[in-house]
Amino acid sequence: MQTRVLTGITTTGTPHLGNYVGAIRPAVEASKRDDVDAFYFMADYHALIKSDDADRIERSRLEIAATWLAAGLDPQRVTFYRQSDVPEIPELTWFLTCVAAKGMLNRAHAYKAAVDRNTETGEDADAGINAGLYMYPVLMAADILAFDANKVPVGRDQIQHIEMARDLGQRFNHIHGREFFVLPEALIEEQVATLPGMDGRKMSKSYDNTIPLFAGGKKQLRETIMRIVTDSSLPGEPKDPDSSALFTIFRAFASEVETAAFRKALLDGIGWGDAKQVLYERIESDVAPMRERYEALIADPIGIETILQQGALKARAIATPKMAALRDALGLRSASPVVHVSKASPPQVATKSSKMPRFASFRDVDGSFRFRLFSAEGEELLLSVPFADPKAGGVLQKRIKAAGTDGVVLQVDALRIVLELDGEPVASSTHYHDELTCEAALSQLRQALDQLAAQA
Image (cartoon, rainbow, N blue to C red; front, side, top):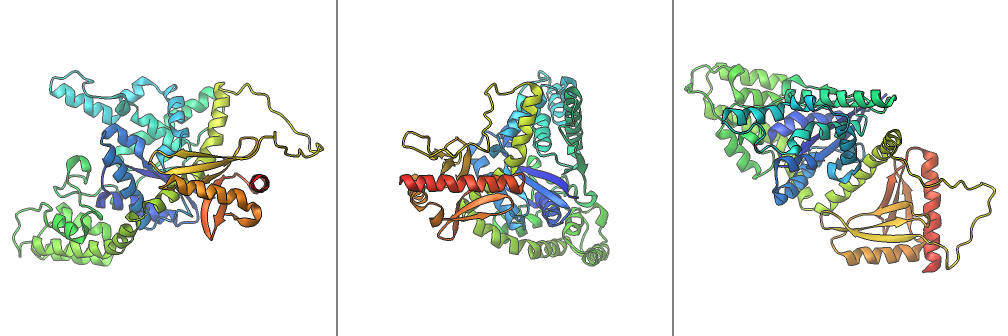
């Protein structure tokens, strides 16, 4: 039986060693286990609470995606997506908002801290606090509950949010009399839950004390490590490893043997400059191969976009039916009659006046261009990869129209249909729930392609 594990990083900055050690590395390692169904996402809606710098958020989304992939995340094994590519998440946020107690939100750590700061300075309690910060726990709950995550890796400062997600899921289940949501649990790795920054406090963008993972290359990594604050102990004087940020960071990267040797060196009086050099060399040995992969990924943003869009399709294959069940429970049902077609009915022959499959082009939020293929009945069959030039998408549509099923390759990969031309995947379907549904969709797609070819 698999355990579904979900985690993400807010897209407001450049990834640092704390992100890598505390979240990315353990998540990537967990994703390789056969008993883990791993979900990883970039929390770009959460980023809007903290930043109104559009360029910074856009750049951070790219850097974080490249970082996770460079660290070894396999998008074929996991579900890797952007929060903003799954519209079911903000919809669920509203459903949960309607059962969230204001008193519970008043107790959220981030909101209380902001209120306390205002009170200390004599300001109105809610001065400068937006509703996004106040509702942060509900959005986080929707991130988790939409996918029935069993475990959520978090730092100790985030445990409260997991408890709130449980409370909201449990309350919704109770009100509507069914177990709609799996109740998540916080997953804490004690040794690496937090990593100290340059000043000894928790490594955080908020404290401006981070050590970059890839930004600035190995030169920047070494220079930053050399600026880590230490005590005034001179070379030859013993250093206390347990109170040293250098030792804590070293231990997060090193084996037990290496850690024991570094502890002994500190106790034996190694100079701080030499100790920092040892720390740099140990980290660089792990980071250098990842940095090379990272730089190649950053140079191919279209490739990253394709991976993320495919991940969003996988995520929505789970979130969409869940939201349909929730809408039904809430009374948000469609009034349209369901038409049942008898199996004995003769097949309908397409005529010039009949509805035909169609392509629909659109511009994505990142400025790229894509298209969808819809069946004659209006069901989405395929979503294309992104194109920088809309003309390229138009050319591809014409090729698909003319090709029919004989001129393309249709592959089924993990209950998802992929259309290939010239050996390259150019469009794909959503992920289907079972083989029968996938086979039916494949048959429907083949029929649509042949209809298009007949009209070309």
